[in-house]
Length: 414
Ligand code: PLP
Image 1: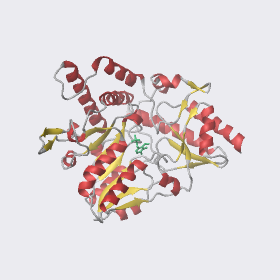
Image 2: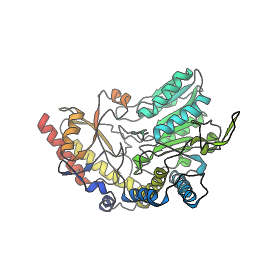
Image 3: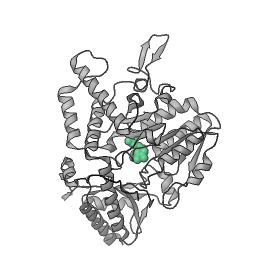
Image 4: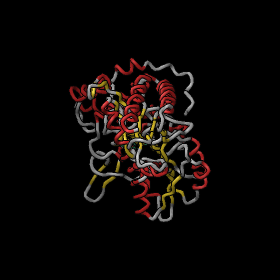
């Protein structure tokens, strides 16, 4: 489990809970206990209000209009970009490309940078714990180019085998693409060290931050990664918006990913010239309200303090892990020493889908399945797990409800 951040002002969880209207709702006559934030987070009222306000009084298309409404919408959209820049501590807002989600960001890099840079016989290094979003685009690119996908193995705790990682890096390696935090295991990978090793051999690194940004402060300049991707919907923002960070010097070398309106400088039937980044990568009308909502979600998180959030989740994970260890026949999948708030488990007596269905009857929302990470399920020799993912709005009392609900499963099936 990760060390708790120092000097974090404590999070007032009860106050936080009041910010999320859905947490007062009930399902099957039971108060909602939401442990599926790794799939998607709930939204605070400030984000909901920002959407309503923008659509009620601020909406227009951006970047083209000369009237006040459009100018205002453009300003809000670009302010949101700057908030993402600040959140990741990127140096320049031109390094932030708005996309739909982490999946699109990775595809953008694969199809733009990858098609340009990767050739026959080259290698791309990923890990055994990747989400499909950080496997399939590279697999497709390798198939197209005759390149080879190399996979860093994971040990029984769910930690990367670092010696194997080092030995995979060679002069054939064109890119390392690795998750910062695993969605299926909760493992926090030593991202800075991974980047340092790759850079020592001149290899650029993409970090998949989809599960990292909601839980800890991320500094892309300190990490020195070349690309960093995340989805807004896991970060208390609307679905349909996400971000790609890329070092400006790298983005400038990359061709467009999609083409059409918005991303051009000039068009004739003979020739089109493209905008500089990030506009070059933002073809068509974007999710304007989503971007604004993402900016508000970032403000909200920064007000709470990412260190305070991480400290609370660390405490809650320790509590939940200890409670899980008391349950006979329960095996936690993913016991890395550095872990974010993900508890994947299997029960001897019941299939994960049955577990999730029974927990639902108790008002407890968890995820069951392969979590879009089938290779890591194979590694642990399980077809699926039940996953409870913890977040800033979860409490010890909710963990107790979860544990009692698992008790019902074991009574029924055990
Ligand atoms: N990467 C990781 C680690 C994830 O957990 C997820 C989603 O669960 C993704 C990528 C893909 O995110 P999205 O579906 O928002 O593109």
